[in-house]
Image (cartoon, rainbow, N blue to C red; front, side, top):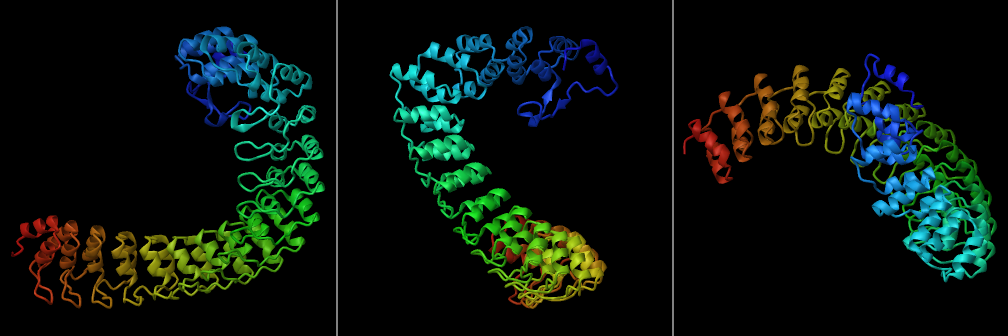
Length: 594
């Protein structure tokens, strides 16, 4: 934006111009929520465009406008913004970034906003740093943050003024920790030569070497090691410097640490080695370095997972190939019995699954629950991965410990397309689990209308019963899945079919307050006064469960309100005994005998 007022006017006069539009661009800091036109004017110091937006469109001055005005540097914009917003710490950050010392001192003196010394270092603003020292004379704090600038001669001055070489500040950081963070090698050497404690820890027990590794400060790491830094020291999470070097893909720093004796197979509190972490972050080259120096490829963490498990979990195909080529056990299981292929299937890592299979992964291997990779691919509706597994010989009708096939699971999760894939490759539609349920029962249970239609169109037995004699229609009624019930009925489901206790679908609808499904069943000929083995009608069951709305539906369609069960009890007696006040009122209002 060049403050070209005439072109900006033309822009605003275009058809469809939106005064409230926002720009999302990586060119600007913290861009995720986007910036308004007025905020961008402030950022660029475009004062004429700023005035146009304010006068013509009444654009709102936001806090971000004020913050950006300290970056844009236009005093007229800044003055206008200050009328509507109060400066905050982000204004100071912008002032430091702009290297305008007048803005910095203005915020410090007029609004008592402290100069952030870390920002001074990050944006190489030594002048603001010195202004802070001049204003506060805070030797200790300035000494710690001086490391960012990597000017050893200044340390001589502060030490002569009584600074403590091991002074701690925010989070327990010393000047040496800061030097390690910003790779200030010369400063680190100076501090160490003046007896800085190399192995001093911050609040989370990180040493300067941890911090150097975390920030890929290779040269500073070498200085620390050469002066006796404990290379295998652990922080509060049990991590060594090598863990952090690998986590941030700092290959060169990792090589330095290894060459000086870092324990490659050291574990953190979760049992992760550096190789686990390299696999997690797909740090292929760093993984190769670790392996070439003796990392145990099949080492397990506290969950029983190897590096290969983590490479697959994050779909790190290249790292997985490196691990396999160096002898990773493809069929190794974690504590839950998951192989890498189970995990690839779960996360729909199709390409990585193909790599595993091509190197001999057992497609039909089961976990501790009896599930194969195909079960997991289907559970997460990973159609493509399921197709890969099937094409390489996955047993479509394999059952887990509950007797579920992949098709049961597809029906449960309404994975219609995956169900079609399974059926097209020979899945047994009427296969039962250990409870006697077919895939259609699960489709009915979870309102998987579309999947139910697919199953029926391919020959699912609509009136198949579970061990308790339940049909899919019973289950649809129990779960008030009226749309699925409609589908089942339209394809010939027996509305008055009874379970082992003599209950029909209408009894189930009454039991679970499935008013809508009850209406569907009745409209298609359900026998309202049908009795169970105990002589209960649907109205008895509605009364028992205080389902007064369903009771209203039943009565309005001719339910015998005074019908008795095998023990001579009426629906009203059921409602009274179970303190179902609302249903009692409904029954009495419709003539129930007391």
